[in-house]
Length: 89
Image 1 (cartoon, rainbow, N blue to C red):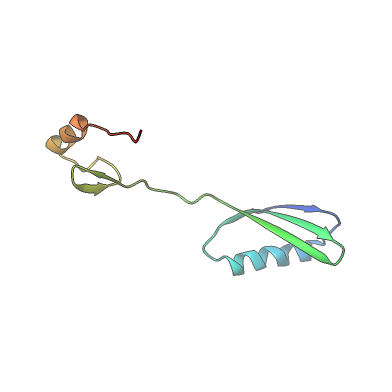
Image 2 (image 1 turned 135 degrees about the vertical axis):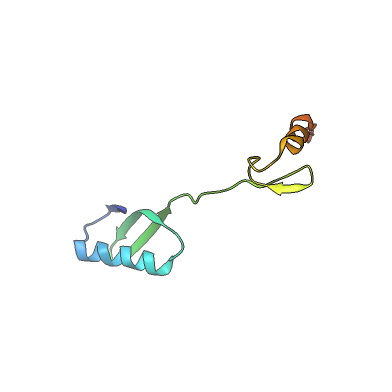
């Protein structure tokens, strides 16, 4: 369900549905969860708001690029625990 906020005038349900369809067509890889539609005379400004995509963090630990430590054996996990973290000062 896409939340639609219309300011500066009124739009019919058909017009709103057409703007939603346009957003889905124009941005097929983005999941629109809200739209702000501002009406100014003959002009319409549309702001799309997207759902945040899932982001997996990848780190280099003990020479390996990993997202989680669940596949490390006891020795590698011990290396992680003994690691010295350096900070940028």
